[in-house]
Length: 607
Image 1 (cartoon, rainbow, N blue to C red):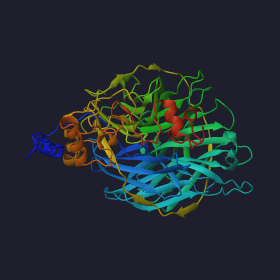
Image 2 (cartoon, helix red, strand yellow; image 1 turned 60 degrees about the vertical axis):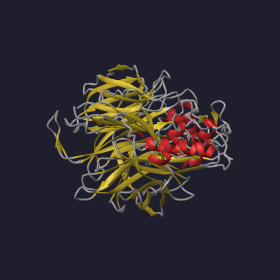
Image 3 (cartoon, rainbow, N blue to C red; image 1 turned 45 degrees about the vertical axis):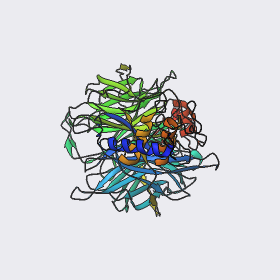
Image 4 (cartoon, rainbow, N blue to C red; image 1 turned 180 degrees about the vertical axis):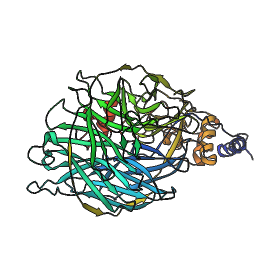
């Protein structure tokens, strides 16, 4: 005898077949402008995004795991390739497993003599105590698989000093016009007696050409490096050229920015700019910024008109948030031509020129929690200043102009995450707008300070310690989501959800089953968070979850397990939520000697 009431699984099967029929005849339309995030269950933060020769982009990030049940911090390199629509092409987790923690900061594409890509090179900071060779460079092939790894450093070759590096940071890596890899950063000496900047120049096989250390002679007391705290943050290679202002010949070499100060003297940090030859010998140097407030160079760019643009942070004496200052210099003598300060914007990356000669910077609003892009004219006037984000924390660390004039920025979000923080990608129109997405027009106070260039002199020595290391890579579990247009932000933590609520609209209905099928059979977007898709709470997302949801909706099946009656946290979740900028930096700085007052986010050891 047959039952008049369909069995739950039979009814669910009929519904599934109808849904699949509709699913495969539907072609979703994706807007060109968008917000997206990608990452793993751990903490990721895009430190730099670079364009590649094949028209895509590579981001470099730490992948950090704070495990509350196992004391300690695990940090590896997270290298990912994405297209212009934020689709992940591949991602790699790179490092020495399990012992050495390496935090990446900068990545560059490496090309051969014909200009064809041969892979990528990464630098950053090794989180280990008292090592004489703290600067690392890792190279990969074009698919992100490790080719080689070496560390660099060494004792100062000065009689009677016996100064040994105990920590260091590589802040920027580039490939110069000669095809060499060039890294700039800083080294800290034992006993915190001083910090010195360096240039590291290697061949693409990581054989050392030279590693040159520098010292501000104004603070030369008992020996090289003692009493001085300085570092380099950014470098660009320049070709031989003529100064557009003076007509003076400028040989090829490097332009570098950073900061310098005297140990233990507050208010003495100044923005440093130097020009060197290809061997790293200083040809011209200058210091800039407010005379009685700490400042530090963060980014440098040689503009198409031959002038130099420098971005620096200024630590306000009033206790207000950091401000951003942009200097315009001549390339030959580094004469200061123009300067503008922007109160309300904190830059976190490079300065880049657009096709129409304007300049774009990525960062965040000083008085809010949104990642921000600032676009300015060559004369410093603001074109726009927009914030992108939601109700938690977003920071943008890099921005590029695409071939069609749209802007593509990367950084970090704590709102739409697989873990405590994920990489954050934002593509906007050329005017900074992003239709249908949360965009905030921010107000900043622009002023034009009058500060002259000041002179400084530098001496240098070389160190030669090089060690090879075995580094491996694995393919992590990377999840990418389209945040907007599409996902509607909701006012609760990123990891709170209703089980079975795939669409994150706080309702359990047939749309959730359709979205779940789309993910399973049509490469549709992931639920937010991923465990929301696990309707039957068995730890997996599969067709059983769709059947469970449909049975609950149409056949009197059991309700999903908690959290279900109302939005709540995952019972299995042991990572903290990050709601504010203060909490973000507290989480970020747990195992580092860095904080926001120390000019954060690029691991500057010296300020």
